[in-house]
Image 1 (cartoon, one colour):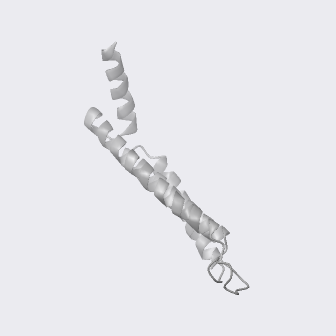
Image 2 (cartoon, helix red, strand yellow):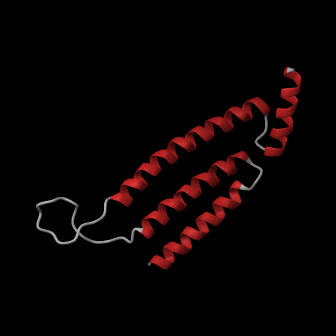
Image 3 (cartoon, rainbow, N blue to C red):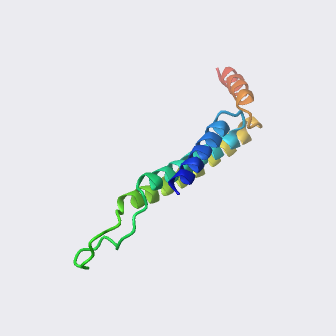
Length: 118
């Protein structure tokens, strides 16, 4: 099972990096989101899903599940949601201002705007 998850993590990392290296702004945002999902799966696979009781004292259980990886992943999901929302708003504002989502055209338009202000 761990091998399948490792292959899925590798594919998600590869697709995420490919999307980040493209020229379209929306693909860059989707690539960062895919990378964080790959990290979530990697953390879950590295914590080796263990079976056991909830980590409560006084229950008479011998084996407990480690709650730290789940807490880290939950925190990361919340942070990922906030960053993705910020990136989408930022890209929408850039599209409104520069009328393009292509990174090369955005650089040239941005330099034109900077030259006009001076």
